[in-house]
Length: 89
Image 1 (cartoon, rainbow, N blue to C red):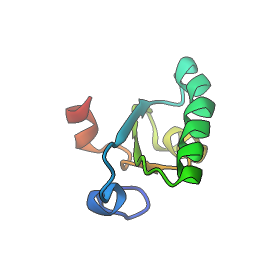
Image 2 (image 1 turned 90 degrees about the vertical axis):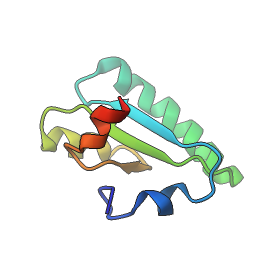
Image 3 (image 1 turned 45 degrees about the horizontal axis):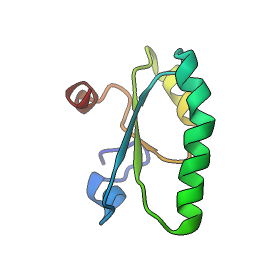
Image 4 (image 1 turned 135 degrees about the vertical axis):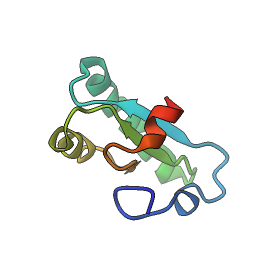
C-alpha cells in the first residue's frame, strides 16, 4: 500500500515507459495554475490509450490541505508525509 488509494507502485506503473512525479502543494499559486494544464494533458493521453502514470508528491503543511488539493487530481498520490517524497525531491 504505497499510495493513498491502497495501490502499490508496481500496479500503478505497470509497463509504462515513463512515470510522472508531480511535486506540488495547495499553497503554491503557480502550481495551482499548472494543475488544469497537466490534468488536460493527462486526460488526453488516457483517451489515446497512452499510459503516463503520475504520482502526486505533496509539500502541503497539513493533511486537510493535502486531501482537498489531491481531490482535484485524477491520478495517484503518495500518502501524506511519505519519506520517499523527500528522497525523490
